[in-house]
Image 1 (cartoon, helix red, strand yellow):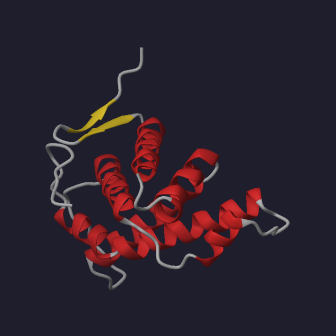
Image 2: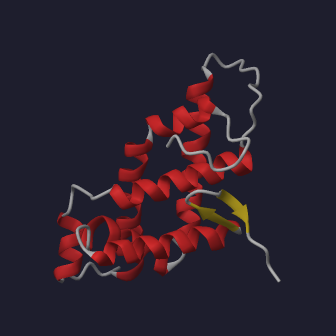
Length: 167
């Protein structure tokens, strides 16, 4: 990550926790999207070339989704993070707590986003169908726009997170 999304993006423990579970969460994201897509749009389990490719693919191309993950992690730190450490009385350290909180928020967001067919298709296109193709970049752009609309934030490469102004 190492990219500051906003001026007070200084919760380094949360950022470290998000980095440590990044690959695990990305794989689980694609797995969840596969399951939801197949349940919703192929409930009878009919086999065709695309369904077979979805079911047979085990190694996902996560490069494009990694950037999406970083943006979602930045939005989480922007909306829910504090630089103050709280007192923990359950025996866990702060990294473990941040990992659990981030994992829960990430999956809640994915469940919410999965209500949109566009989100499901864009994740599948990015990770499974067109990983080496230009269409993967187009699918990633659709994902990025979807995230911006969901949170009411614009995420710029150099300026970071900026609230969208609605007329």
